[in-house]
Length: 140
Image (tube, rainbow, N blue to C red):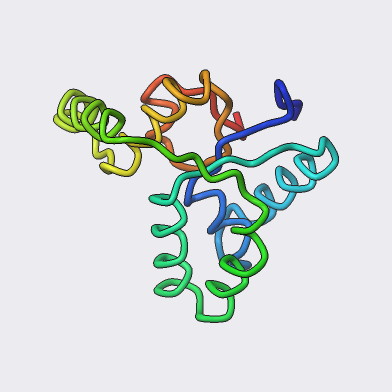
């Protein structure tokens, strides 16, 4: 995998798979992460994803893994900040796509952040919704 501009947006499904050995995508996430390290890639995310990831790790993995994410992974991330205009646009995206697809509001926010603020940068995710929203996704 070669990341344009050595940067990517990371979703909860990627973080969870990378940190949880029981996840079916754990090995793939490890390979993606190794490629990012090799490329010196900057990994972007939002506070929404951080919140969702910590919660999922605590509920479906365990406390130690959730703390590892907070103490080791989060400090290395470029956290994208946004204003209410992104939330308003995300609401429109959610209304437009959620009738036919089960997308989360967090995914709608991510879509707007990626397309509007991050110039369509590729996403590291195992969530099919990102591809269905027209985003560039790794793994392909």
